Length: 463
Image 1 (cartoon, helix red, strand yellow):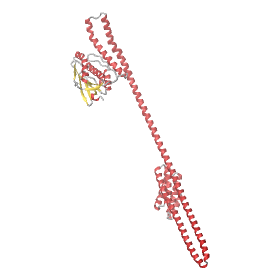
Image 2 (cartoon, one colour; image 1 turned 90 degrees about the vertical axis):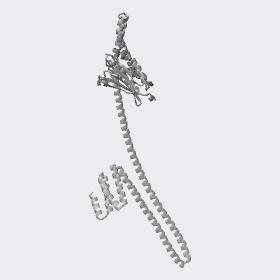
Image 3 (cartoon, one colour; image 1 turned 60 degrees about the vertical axis):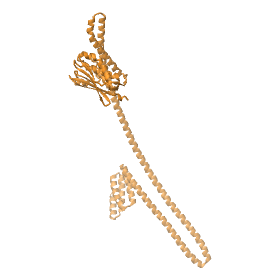
Image 4 (tube, helix red, strand yellow; image 1 turned 45 degrees about the horizontal axis):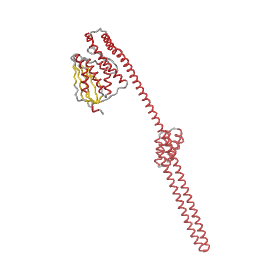
């Protein structure tokens, strides 16, 4: 590097800027070979500034060539391509300039040959005139010989010109072919490199996408498995409680009925004695009937055998029929029943399911009312649904009881006159209302009242 520094200093002192620029180019090449690319770029920047000032195309061509190699080694494809394009453009310009010079030289040769021909002709004419003075016959012969010589020279010159033109054309064609091959090779390399980069990118992207999808599928399947396991645990718990209900609550009333019938058959009861126990037995049979109805509906829904068959019907009529069903029970407890639903309000739902919902809600309301209380059914239209209310002025519920309602846990609370419950009613109400595209909820104040609400679609939503 010291020799280059000395060469630069000498050339600069002599004012030979071209040599200074060439020295920096050589220095950049050495740095490039050593892998010191930043130093190579510094040397090139200095050489480029001098070459731009001198406007020396050949220097610029060499500088752009080294720029291309350095940026390519650094992996800066954009800068490498930029200087390659500059290199190609200035190379083409230099070649065009050289071609112009060659063409000018060829034209100069033609002009020189033409001048020589004219000069020979002038000499020949002078000689002819001189010979004509000496010997006419010799002159004629000389003229013939000179004419032949002139024609021969012309042909030789034409042949020489044609040969030079042919050589020039061949040189141009050869150069063009070389440049075309270079361009094609560079384009092919760039295309292959670009294709490889794109292929690698898309392969990686595709692999990441597949991995993400697999992970999401695993998470989803784990969630489904956990949900199914939880549902299975709930169903097993529900099954155990149902078997407990069936074994205790069904067997006890039926056992009492069988005992009563046996005793009556054997004559242990008189007619008056039978009447004394018939009321209690009637309550037990009614409870048993309600339990069986709820058990059958629940079992049918769990076996996916329950079909929703929606039709248009009037809510007032369904509510009134269920109030009539419990009218005697309400009368015995001193509870008033009121139906405030407008008679012309129609809904689109499964009437059998809604009947069961009304029956369970009315039975619960009567069960937890004391003498002098009231059970009221009303309805109001909310957008495209009807909101039904079953309200009572009974004993109300605690926050803990409200929290447990409508869940999958079976629990039962005895009524104000020690009435039993099945524990299935409200669970069935929620399932049936959900199947009919509605919602169900409750508001209650302990010791004051309770009000159950549910929504079902109006008749115009039949489609």
